[in-house]
Image 1: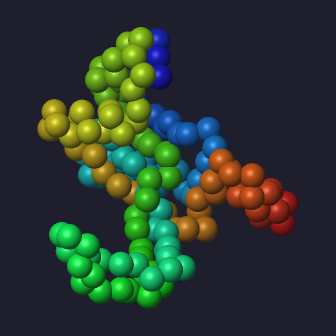
Image 2: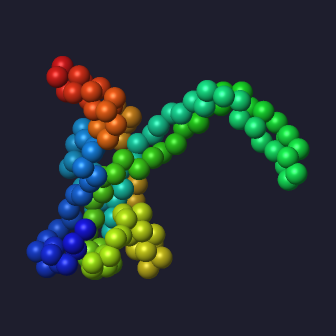
Amino acid sequence: MKANLLLGRINKPFFTSNCDIIIKNDYSSIVQFHQDGKFDLTLVGCMKHQRIPYGVCTFKNGGLLKRIEEKPEYDFLVNTGMYLMNPAILNYVPDKKYFDMTDLIALIQKKGRKVGVYPVSEKSWLDIGQWEEYNSTVRKLAK
């Protein structure tokens, strides 16, 4: 991100996102959440259910098996790649240096800034970064 090109040109919270996602949601509710929580940056998260199709082994030092959990299922709140941030956060983005959003989040938290997480439903997040998901999204949007 070339933050220096945006400094002084944006005077209210703005959205940014990865180029391979679509979030179907009421964006005004995300803005309201951001403002009500007085967050400096709000990450849009999505609950994902994952089933591991194998037995998962837990072991102790030396390789001694503790247990096997067969085909466990987990729920995770994952980062969708969409963010709402206040313009002041751009001051933390270094110029002419590769800097991931996760680096920015870690830095602003270290500096005492507030980061919120706004959850959306699994059906609201369309990730078109994989060919299979792209085709699925095209079919969903065509309905």
